[in-house]
Image (cartoon, helix red, strand yellow):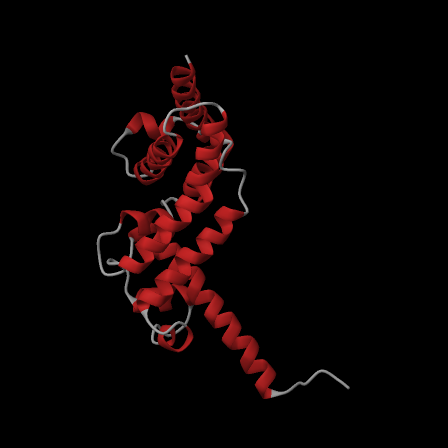
Length: 197
């Protein structure tokens, strides 16, 4: 039997392409401006589609936001091992630098607006994918209260990602991602060394 062809197959490809374009536009805009500041019309314009199609493919702006955060989380899962804080920091900052914005995952963590479920989901992703592996490493190294220390270090990383492109801290903007990674790694090692003495 042959592969079906004709109008329905073409529409399916178009629908998939439109959905993907809307998601990519949302990731970019939410990652740069946050949930509140972005309209469906802007997402549609960026995607080259009608913003009202968000309802068809995602259900709502909030659902699209959750999808953008989830997609970002999947990419974080494929990143360098979070327990290697220097490499992970360099990776995360390089991504933020390329996009010129923190990204939807960090924006979700910082948001105080109308998408609390996206914020909670982002926090859970950060705990599972970053905090837990780093806490396990710190525990192996003998650090006192490794979970709290890991949360502090990951919070520092999120703050650096959020503020690096803001222009508020000019020296932060001039440091390479690798240098910042080495600084956070040094902080992790220093804390572990202090507690084992």
